[in-house]
Amino acid sequence: MRSETKNMTYNDIIGFIGVFITLLAYFLIIFDFIPKEGVLFYVMNIVGAGLACYASVLIVYWPFVVLEGTWTLISLVGLLKLLKAQPQE
Image (cartoon, rainbow, N blue to C red; front, top):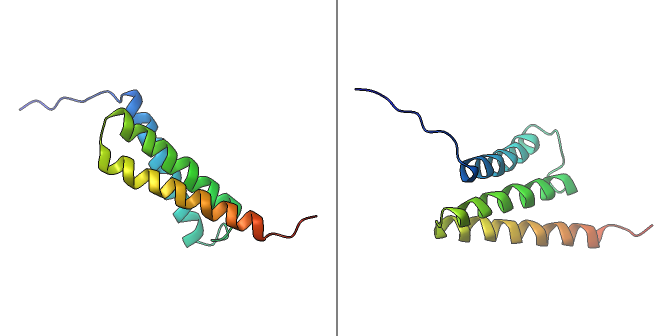
């Protein structure tokens, strides 16, 4: 039986990058490379989930559009809340 390989499509690449960024953010906080309540963590989640959401839209997979879209919005709210709480210079 012959195994065929599929070339990665634009959708695959965008989705892979988004998922990689999101997982990298968690790896970095688990091993204390970045603070859990830091700007970088929120930005990585916004970008990663946003890209994964976009890839899900491209392949018309609505459950993940909802999941990743919600994750993007929650991370955005978290970032705005963090920035608002920081003292102004």
